[in-house]
Length: 328
Ligand SMILES: Cc1cc2nc3c(=O)[nH]c(=O)nc-3n(C[C@H](O)[C@H](O)[C@H](O)COP(=O)(O)O)c2cc1C
Image (tube, rainbow, N blue to C red; front, side, top):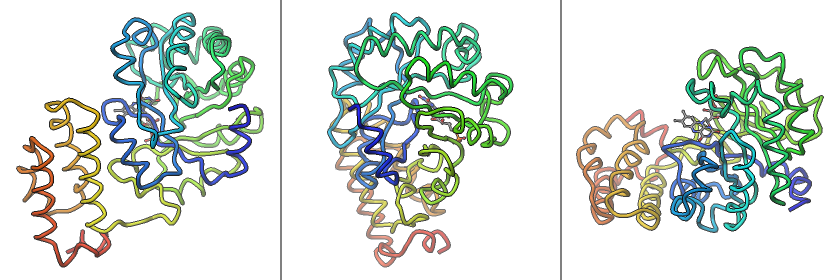
């Protein structure tokens, strides 16, 4: 694992990340993304280090994964360094590539209690978290953070604290905590930061597809895609923008459904797949004609049936690239 970064830097094109996303991403979603784009690396949604330590049930539920998801990065959050260290010992058992610490989330109530991006203005605790993690595990430790809390004037100093604690990699999102999701992202402080630190730096801001990422990455190392990857694994294709055919989309929908069946209990998976099915087809104006069936599926057979109906209704357009179908 020690030469992991060196190898990846030599094969730079490979490192494009699927951003972590609580509520939407899970093992089935990651497997679906990796089926289309095997070269991406996935970060899990965040898990509380405290919960992992106190609930074996949670650990057994969220940490096992399919080989296709590897190398898999697990993201954790909490505030006291001791529990991070204990959680690392548990994570180690599940063939995880490295641990990412969430110092990114801007939610007001947790930030006030020094969780998440509240750590940006509590450098010493941030340092201790990374330090304790490094002492507890041989897995590399990375941090996902923001430009700063209120302003971006402390970014270099904060990153140095993390680097000094032996963080192996940083991901920086081009907004401050106060900005949360608003305002345009500012990338200049991230380009500047790269000149001051010696560890790989990933950027995260409104990247549309692989080609867009390669253009924006400049002096940074790699990039992370979030919104563009919503039900669109093709955004990771090297020859992007890539417009899949309707056939490809329908096939991926079914694959996603089968993976959900494999990883979740029945009632839960059928409730979850409904929103995904509609979202895969969200760019087609005709999706409304199938919405009722899509949002009431209760079995894999029903998923297959509705997909077959769409295939039959659009049999002449199955192999036409989607940008043309959208216009039809
Ligand atoms: C509903 C939701 C859940 C998210 N969950 C996580 C998460 O678990 N961990 C994390 O680091 N970021 C999470 N993010 C942030 C994204 O990974 C990403 O960094 C951010 O939204 C990038 O924004 P942009 O590319 O639109 O600028 C979440 C965002 C949203 C909207």
